[in-house]
Image (cartoon, rainbow, N blue to C red; front, side, top):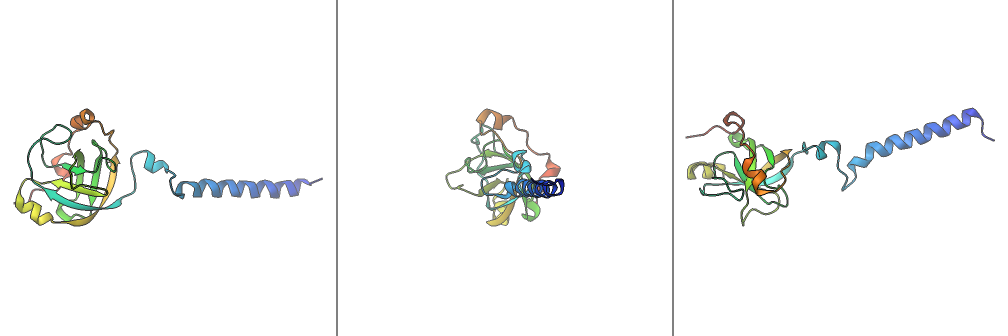
Length: 156
């Protein structure tokens, strides 16, 4: 028969194992952490380019600054993102467009002039999901664009 002291040691060991499992479980591949499920996903590296084609987006709105095109399997329509490490182009954007050449971890930022698109070029950026969209066209169309002060200032 175990003594109370021996039971206490076993209980502490089980408690330590339970704490370790709880701390390590979110780090396991395929497991979502609380931060990821609430929309505040950690930033990930993306290829970024810029486009100037004016017209209707996949969400049914007109192109304008503050809009990005993305692969809907990676960033669904209506997703609000923060682009980091993009110099003057860093800031918040909303995914309202897709594109034939936008595949995987690639975002295409709408800018209003060819000179700004050339200035942007192609670069590696970090993308943080602020709020994951539903992927529905109507919901994405109604998602407000970030305020001008949240986006990169226009360079003329």
